[in-house]
Image (cartoon, rainbow, N blue to C red; front, side):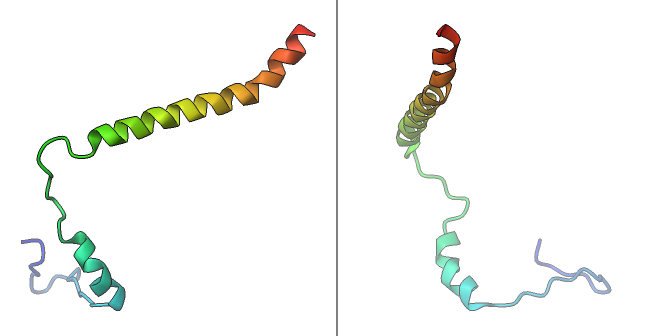
Length: 72
C-alpha cells in the first residue's frame, strides 16, 4: 500500500488535517471515476474551435498594419 510505513524509514509520511483540506475533500471524492459515453467532449470541441477563431481574428488585426505599410 502507498500509505504503509516501514520501521526505520526516515521518509515516513505524517498527515495533518487542515480546515482547507476538510473543505476540499468532497471535491476530490470522485477522483478516478469516468462518466460513461462522451460526456462534455463535444462542448469542449466547440469551445476550442471558437477559441481558435478568436485567436485568428486577433492575429489578423495585429498583422493588418504591416500590410498597409507594404503597399503604400
